[in-house]
Length: 158
Image (cartoon, rainbow, N blue to C red; front, side):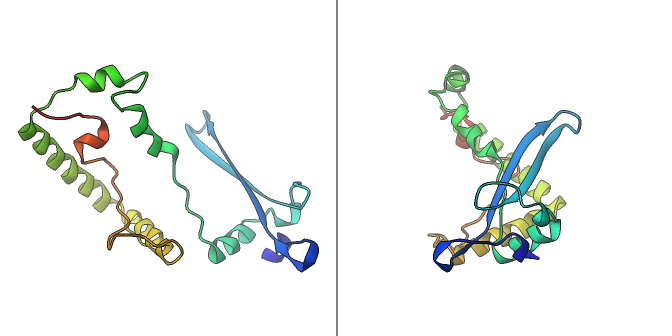
């Protein structure tokens, strides 16, 4: 199985090279992902192009896909080229901001409760703490909807 993807290198070492690509497909209105195991020369290993080989690799080394949406916060900062002027002009008093954050937090919890898979993802991400030390007792949090006003670019209150 995974042996079909393993390549023998010099000095008795072995390696597995996985290439993953993603692009937007207008026909399905979503991103599609492609993957290939490669030989030492960078060519696709046809015998390894079977889902069971990828599944076996994922069992040995969990692979987590995180969308680039985490970069959206950068675009909504007060100094951003496109949205900066809008973000700087938003003035929300502290009471309204707290009310909005509470509502967003409640809505976020409803979304998470409606999809059990979020809890599974959260638990799998927690497992990474065995490989990477984390500073918090609750190192993983999932927000389908950002609940903190400052994280969605809402600026300070008055």
